Image 1 (cartoon, one colour):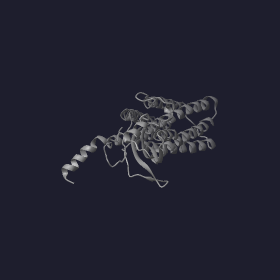
Image 2 (cartoon, one colour):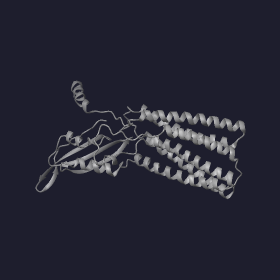
Image 3 (cartoon, rainbow, N blue to C red):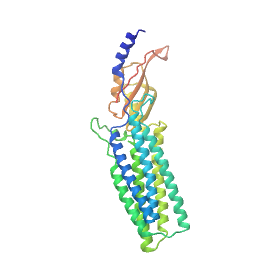
Image 4 (cartoon, rainbow, N blue to C red):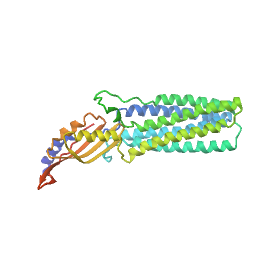
Length: 336
């Protein structure tokens, strides 16, 4: 084939190509939020560590070191956002770098699960072997930590899905995916720490005023169990994305029903998440009356999160009472 002919073929195929923009509508905004929380956490960490060293307060120093773990988690989240944005045009990623956030979320939940385990072990040890507690500085540290975490949680708050630009059919509400899991993991860290701070304040106040030394470790055990459950739930969600599980049964059923709405059958169907609220579909449609690719794309138009579609249309021919595939294949792509 001559160079001119090859160039003409490239020009003919150009309208059907599209970029894999799978980072989500709010990628840059969520990245800015996470960077702001990273800076806030880092400053708080530095002040507490310096204050603990200057005042010889182990409670303040311990909370500063605890803040260091949160700063590490936020750094992972920020790095994931930055790397995904930088790799957006890297063709080595078959469906784009949209899963970097899910990988970051999974890593963060593993750290959170280990944190819960450490809290649980320490609380059980304290329950059987109580240690003297400096209630006043401990309450001050817990209150300061709660304030920082509440501000961080407000910065990382997730916004509801925008409903503009597409229909609101009866199953619309069931088709949304889990959203930006990277942001959700960062939020979970500060929310869990805020919950621990609240429980710690209650336990410390009870121990200080009522002399109930057992309340602090018991509340630590409760907090560890709650945090562990939160971490396990998000770990399952992020892990499901990483191993390409179907994002939801409702969405898979909706895709199947729309592709079969003209009496077709499906020989194969794959639905999986490739980024925040971004889903890819590969389907093999079998029909005696093959339609243009645009017909099948139009059937999925009411599912806005389905942004990458590949459809194989197999024309069914009956010969001697046996159905055989006609040599007609159509590939369809829908850009983001």
